Image (cartoon, rainbow, N blue to C red; front, side, top):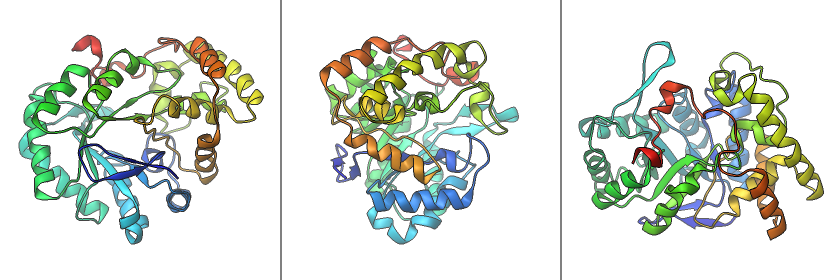
Length: 330
């Protein structure tokens, strides 16, 4: 698989990454055997850029990656995050105080069973703390050798510029897909201006763009049941968009998921998506998207079908929405 160099570092990552959250939380009941097989198959396929966080399964996800892939640590690149603090009823707050940054990092290192993290993100920016203070503490981790590169998640252009003046930011992670093109209104352009890699999470719209969802009914432990875009009324309108995506995919001899992922890949060599899964067959399907070549006519058709703002409903419930920056809040 092709590789990309993370800017401002000596880290090389695979052209396609793997989001690991669903192996431990958020999308139903975890299955250890499935997760282990998927992680091992990812490395076999050259998908070596793995995305996790200390909050995924309350440390379980980091421990899983460390246990399964510890023997091949030199072949993988781990991106993990800190900052979210769980509260009552599943509510999350953010703690970006500089004095806790090293502690959170050392906790992740222990769970991962490694002595360095390739890419360490602030999961969200703490609205109570100047981003400059948090990033300065993250930069100290690079100096000490605990971290090879640092990144930010769900930030706007103003925050990225402020942070980048303190220490080079290697990557920005945000949700980006055919049905969530809002990053095109600012942060992608700013990343390019500063030479920062853009890492889209949920490039398949949390499963909506795969064409496999037929009803707004989700099992226990599936976070989509609380997300406005997947609730009754909004779900049906969003699913209707995917019907046309399926037709285009058939004409291209690929799956809707491969078509949607190929579109993200086609947006630039500085964009490295991290589709998540806990199943080997889906991982292999996603990797197959790299072989899907899209001509300009197909790209134009997808642009018309999924303009900015095409999806119906907010991305997150109200409490979580407050934690994700937008260009409007800059």
